[in-house]
Image (cartoon, rainbow, N blue to C red; front, side):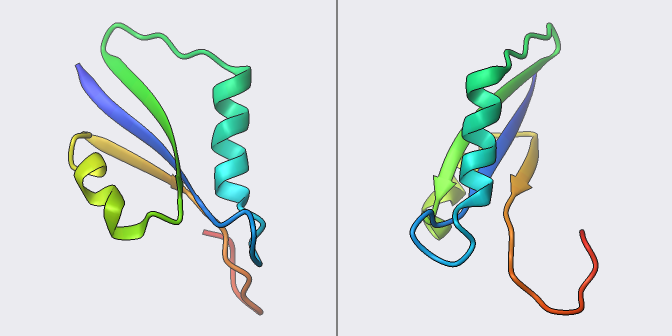
Length: 76
């Protein structure tokens, strides 16, 4: 079984308002994912930074949700 991690990053107390954290918590509350070949885990990574490395290493695929406030840049 392939393991996928949906990881929300952000600080709910500072500039980005924790958009990544709020997003993954919303997805976790509103949706259920079931598949015979894939396991999806959803984690609020907050501001753990390097503390997330042991967790991330356990997965085959990683999707990171985060935001930054930058002028004159393209999405992505």
